[in-house]
Length: 62
Image (cartoon, rainbow, N blue to C red; front, top):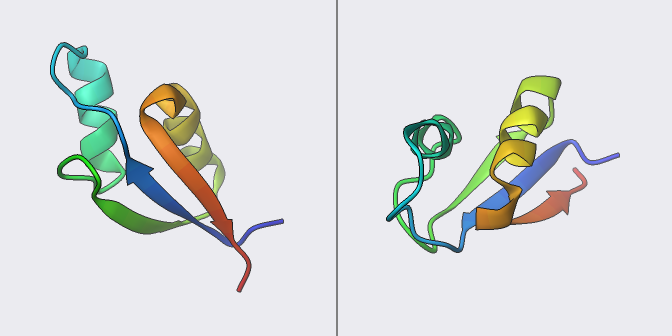
């Protein structure tokens, strides 16, 4: 199982709901094609699942 994920925002926030925009910001993403590395835990997995259609997720095994 992955200990962390590399998450990249690949779709624009234009026309998205406030909840989706807030979720993107909570993951630490700021703009399109911005990548962040987040730790694997249930809260982060839930946020990723909520906006999975806008993200590119790559597991990282440390």
